[in-house]
Length: 287
Image (cartoon, rainbow, N blue to C red; front, side, top):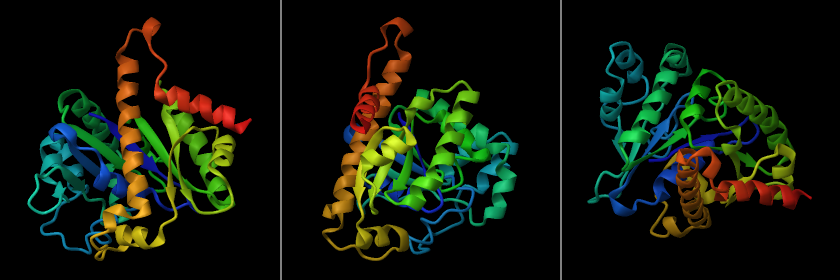
């Protein structure tokens, strides 16, 4: 099982859209399942956006606060999931809807670390599941940043604009510091670059000192379906954004698995993974 966190910054929206695209394109060979957990402290948007409020029953992250206090976090977590799979297929693409109001985030202050631990525990036990964590624009910098500690990889979504790069830099530095403070390897942070703006991906990699996990096109029509709902048509899965999202999903899954293998190997025999090669490549490109 892999745990992948997505985060962004002001001036560079796209973390939730990217995480949702990953959910819809995640490789599911061998009967695997994938869960997208909307953990943005500012509130969730998939239910009201992509699902156009067609959600039956009250489910979501806000229920986990009380469940955590009663010692039933894992049990209630599975009860909150919505099935986003194609009709007449197995329930293999699942969503934990986010908060209804940002005010609810205050009550989760003690729950974020335990939810992070739950994801870590599931990684050891539920081998058939991958979990994607949407931290939105602010989740990687506050109390919810505890969720990055359970992540095999953290993908920072950034656009190629000056405003986006400027906003991302302090967030990346804060994320590195938070991981290092808790003894976690901050080298597992990388970029998902959305191709809008004058800056090339290699420029952003140099500025932020991060490898590039993936590049996505600026495909406004497809992104609007992911953010506002509507019928994407029969060709939705073959649009430029969704094709590149599928490539991104395969890459992230491979990187996460290789990081797990590296960390589980004896220290003196740990191999150089694709992630390490990506970091080296980013450094060489910057030169």
